[in-house]
Image 1 (cartoon, rainbow, N blue to C red):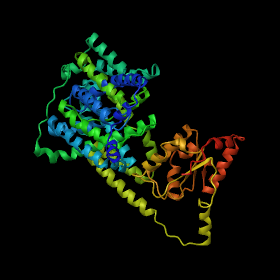
Image 2: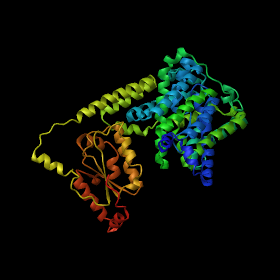
Image 3: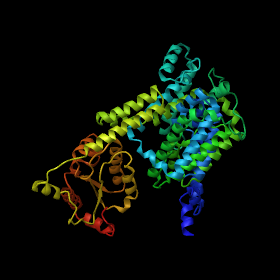
Amino acid sequence: MSKYTSGWNQWMPKLVVCLRNYSRQDFVADLIAGLTVGLVALPLAMAFGIASGATPQSGIYTAVVAGFIISALGGSHTQIGGPTGAFVVIVADIIIKFGFSGLLMVTMMAGVILIIMGITGLGTAVKFIPRPVIIGFTNGIALLIASTQIKDFLGLQTPAAPSEFIERITMLWTYIDTINIPTVLMASTSLAVILLFPRISKHIPGSIVALFLGTACAAGFNLPIETIGSTFGDIPTGLPALTMPAFQPDLIIPLLPSALTVALLAAVESLLSAVVADGMSGDKHDSNVELIAQGVANLATPLVGGIPATGAIARTATNIRSGAKTPVAGVIHALTLLLILLIAAPLARFIPLAVLAAVLFVVAYNMGEWKEIRGIIRLPKAEQAVWAATFSLTVLADLTVAVEVGIVLAALLYIYRVSQTTSVYTVTDEYVQSGRAHSLQDRGLPSYVSILRIQGPFLFGATDKLLEKTTDLTQFAPIVILHLHNMIAIDATGLHALESLPERLQQAGKTLLVCGIRNQPAQMLKRSSITSSIGQENILPHIEAALQRAQEIMESFDGMGEEIAKDYDTTHAPL
């Protein structure tokens, strides 16, 4: 009986688990967070629907249905699901090639793939996508999203925009003389409100303020600018009709690459979002349950004419910052959007496209992770080449080709790095003596020290092991020594994982020391922010020197270190 229960528990949605001990205080917190993130999601859902080449209601329907399902069935306490910017370019390309009916098929096929990934545990395969590839296609998608909004931001009168980046920019430049000054003023003002309003209030999103002010001005002064109503007509009031999409067997093979791309991107973004949520809330998500929920959501959204959905990092972060405790907040977010759809849908026709363009410009900038480029530039030329190839192909070709080429290049680089770790030594007395300083054998460890040791190559696909081991930082002593003598190689993904550790330990009141770094990892660490984060004096040649440094740190507290050590539970074994 216990085995049966245990088998079902591994697929249990977080909502069911949370409701077992749900309190009134939890509901109040979830209600406030759900209402807040629901208002934030409103302009984003419409903007993503329009930018994808669909309709604003497609975006809203997706946010309602997918948002409800992902929160109700998912494996994260605070994940918010819905349409995201990552899909904009892919969805637009699918609609151009196969029509909207083809997109519905792709979305449902992707849903099936996601469910299979969750059931079989293949969701963990997304960790094998190296960081330069992720950053490259994220940068590329952000640039493409921004380029699709130039027309509405400037109010240009153009033919249908080409899907290719160069051709699109060329066409926009050709029609630059059709610029509409009222549209530019509306878009610029909206952009300024979105960026500056958080300085006035952290509780009211700037995008909501811009949406209401822009809509009021457009309707009140009858401005000569494009609105949702003038371009798409009225948004239907009430619940969307359930319709089974037309299934065309002859399109399965042609649509399979697009479905795999949508599924892979949904898996990557949803799990990245869940990891961000874990870091902000202190919880731990279940990847396989989350992927099954994402799959069910993408099977359901085409029934209401929706577009692909995944976990949304920005909305998830807003949900947590607003005080969300459980998945109930995500359910309330979906019901808030549904209530707006039932009551206020006719008012949406007055929303200016310029306001939504400003919203998407901010989304593109935030999702681009542009600050990461500085870190990429500090990496070796091979890592830079992987990023540059992925970024260029995302912009100039398409995301499928970009990810394929990026992963192939990263795999070749992985093989090269592993081959470089092979060494041949002649064992001498000097060699044996030099190894003693790195050895932990027969060495007494003080109670105020915990030791983390990384064994083998620390490359993409393995970095989550460090996060798993350091999820609960309370188990560590006041001083943590990261022993790297047996870490024979590291790449950009591993470097990123190490860079986040000092700040997390510092927030937990711990001190980090690093020791025993070999040549290739040492060269990579010189290019990172770790040295400045922990100080050069805390990077030691071997474990013997690290233990001496730990003793110096404890003694510098003028006796307080002994009290800290006493308070620490000495039953914790060094790791």
